[in-house]
Image 1: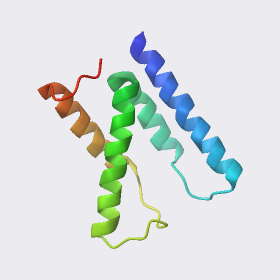
Image 2 (image 1 turned 45 degrees about the vertical axis):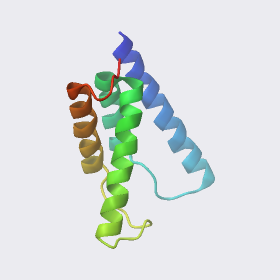
Image 3 (image 1 turned 135 degrees about the horizontal axis):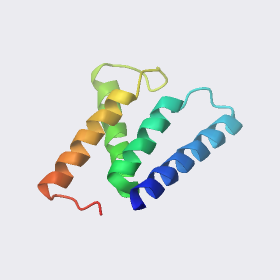
Length: 101
């Protein structure tokens, strides 16, 4: 039950961010598929795990931008970076480096 609540919290959190980004008139932002994936991962990893997953995914995306000489304004799919963050968080949780629950 706790994990379902975490998934709903993540979904509400990112939908709120999307509404703020839309209200500010910013054209590019996180897509609907990314939000859905993060909410599902929130049910598996919990709220802290999903936020850590997002943070690691953002770091991986920044590394990708700098190594591929892409501009931060360029568009690219974010799902692979969420997957990289998920593997890192799940591995660290499995090895006992972090405790998510």
